[in-house]
Length: 377
Image (cartoon, rainbow, N blue to C red; front, side, top):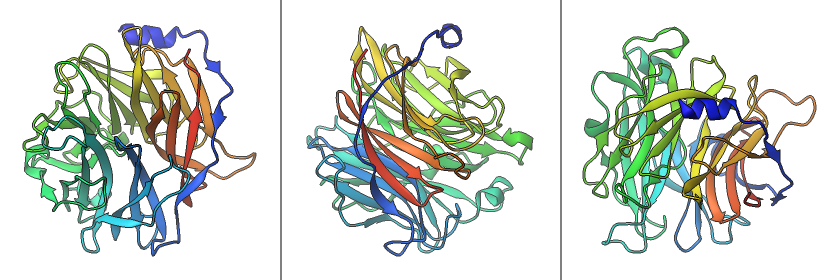
């Protein structure tokens, strides 16, 4: 309950001037043989290289169809990007919801091994919710910074109970505990539907899955007990805790769902609507970027508007997400712009005071990258 009270009693939000780099197009719809690019995800390698993933949609913007996961690489902190590389495909069917993470604790791969979790599907989400179709869960790995990839591993039987229907990873980056009791655990935030479709998407729930042995076996978390939980993102907190931040598919209140786990994401101790985080029913990104005074410093981005996908905002918390005293507008529509100016986003740490934001812009016509520089409070 203390989280609810602190969020409601936040008195001051600092809107500060920040140094923002140019917005560099990374994926542009209509290029490279794809009508549309959507659903960005990004991670950084130990050597500083950035790996940007998204869904390359061959025939259009629709969520189902001939969709592949594609990748571009940057070796100069996002100023320039490599040629496009196809990482995962499913024939002419759906491959999506890329959730990359770099495993930095496996002694077999001291330079880090990239895990790319993703989903495949054989029908539109609406049909899968009705029991007509299936979603599966896979991963690939890379030990050379994304240049080459392993054969795909199907983990559906471990993380997708048969009674569930729709299923989706985060989307955006997955996470790994860097310290404490659960150091090395890889956790992938996710969501699913169960049973027949219900009004206000009450058949949906957020959950997660995790591995403690570098991908050999996987385990499911408990469901978040707030119906309507959808696309989720997770981050490490102080004291061996984990925070999951979820889209509220019900639509009311138009706020993010926040859940706290004290056992590494296995079960959830508390969940609530964070009234400091307005949202128009959209995706968001959460990232641990440091520690201060014994607390985790967090970054969070989403379209901070309750009526449309606009006003993409980066927020910083210095107290494990209890409050968000800094906020920076990354991008917003010019006066009179149409609905959907900004969309999904994902965050990556560039330096102690720099956050990279990979996000959808101008009605999904492109995915761009920018860097926000800020000062610690």
